[in-house]
Image (tube, rainbow, N blue to C red):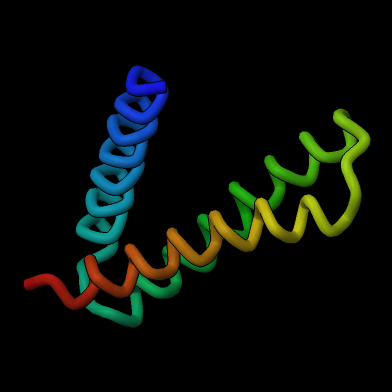
Length: 85
């Protein structure tokens, strides 16, 4: 269990560093950070989770929970990173 939590923490760190680089490449700022967060949340995470849900024959509710969690975390991190200067 500890190894799984450690891996999850490492992957979250990589995810947030990548998001920070993308926001910085866009020029920083809260508006650009929110745009990046929306595009990444919907264009990547929601689409990936949807294809996984179809493959695994999960319900629409399961997809909404999974995609919603990812979107919320990415949007929250985008706001923080957009304000960070």
